[in-house]
Length: 315
Image (cartoon, rainbow, N blue to C red; front, side, top):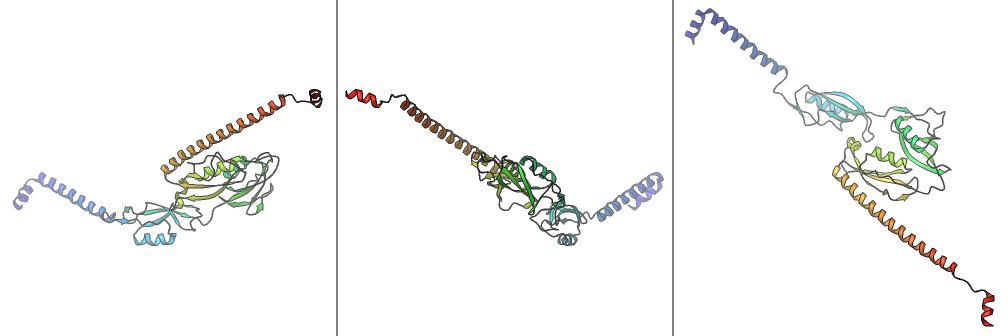
């Protein structure tokens, strides 16, 4: 090796080229080591699952793992207390480098306030749309005798009647009670088919039909944040059934698409069978009525003997 360097020094150009090559190689090694140290290339951290924890607890556990919590958004989910982490990115279980920022969505303590629109004097469909546009919903429908069916007679929120001059506000998502008219000639309404629809869509269609929402049952263990994706797979009143205005329809919801599709097929079969049974019953009733009409017509067409005709017979 010594003789090689001695030989190399005698050739000036080769010597300088070798020095330049060694210098670049040294710089590359130093840069690689510095970069690895600066980015902690070999260090790894597993992101904890912060969902369901209070924000201060999440920040404590994040700090112990050399991670940083950043509040990205806030929502209001009544199923959780205020300040609870609802979602995070990256998700729990993901391996990241130390110092990584974890963006979280927290549950706000209350919803923002919105103005309550005056909807009395409008049709039920118009009133529902106005409330939904304002960020409110229907709590329930109260029916009262009136000449017009599904005409909103009065509106209440938190027990207080909403008047045209009112300037009431309520938390977004609050329910409004509507007093709605029903004519004496309108004795019943039909439940719409809501299988395969979200809870919001199902409620909207039921209210438009003059029906109230009964019990809402989600599949066991369904996370509160996933419930907006759930679909109805069972309704307590079939579309073929005639029910009184204001009747309550209970709904069952799931995230299982196969379960929903199967329920739709089964309900369609039940509805078809119910329609066939109704048509058969109607046919029998019509046949019986035709028979009674025929008997009545036959009795009317037969001549009746008068008392004078009976006297003539005996003499």
